[in-house]
Amino acid sequence: MRDFVITTDSNSDLPKEYLNENGIGIIPHYYDIDGTTYGGDNELTVKEFYDKMRAGAGATTTASNPAVIWETFSGYLARGLNILHISFSSALSGGYNNICMGASELLEEHPDAKILVHDTLNVSLGQGLAIMKAVQMKEAGHSIDEIYNWLEEHRNEFCVQFTVEDLRYLYRGGRISKTTAIVGSMINVKPILYVNQEGKLVSLSSVRGRKRSLSTIVNNMAERIGNHANDTLPICIVHGDVPEDADYVANLIREKLGINNILINTVGPSIGAHSGPGAIGICFPGNYR
Image (cartoon, rainbow, N blue to C red):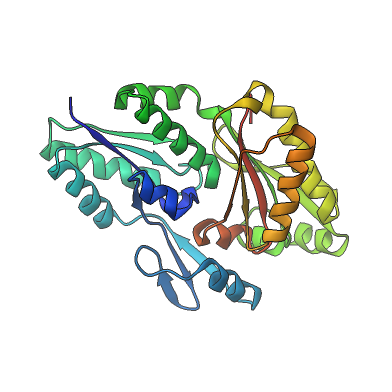
């Protein structure tokens, strides 16, 4: 039986140490800020990226490069490895389609190989949780087909709840109207958003004030987590360069649910370009999104 490698894209927001330790292959997504394109080997630090945004720079994003997909996957196939790719939501990026097209072309040249592409319909560490589950299952001896089928069946059990500090970034990305952004900012309204079963970013509710928005996403998680509270996967907190707020949310989770298995990491630039500095999200295994 051929061995296999797990690959994903840079939008998974998993720590680089975890990716390296587990041999996860990365297909980069790209972002443009101040007229320069970054991604792959050419990266800003997260701090540099968010500082530029705070200074008024606009950022745009681009999906994965077909040539990079071809080169990366060809390297694995040349080593006799099959590929399980765990993708960012197809509803929010063209990256999934790029991967599928590249895989189809490569399989014509390598008919004995297998490339399975799982669309998480998820973002950030919601996508990352699917990757961590795949790693656990691989370590337990499961085959590439078993892992792929499990991920397909349990896709909606990976949940994301988040809020943002500044509404103008959601407006720039077309998520809310200009009027909503202006009025909401004036009265300190904070949106509560989630990733739905179609993989789209949608509004769930809105509250007044930052602290209330943070407690609301924790409360929403508590309603959805169900029997996953004792899961071996961590509760993940992602943030747009606001570590103090991430620590505050972590403490709320410990106090409310008694869970200490918590992973905190930053929202990378490809997603942060749309959520902005100050965004906070909780990604967790749950009964429903």
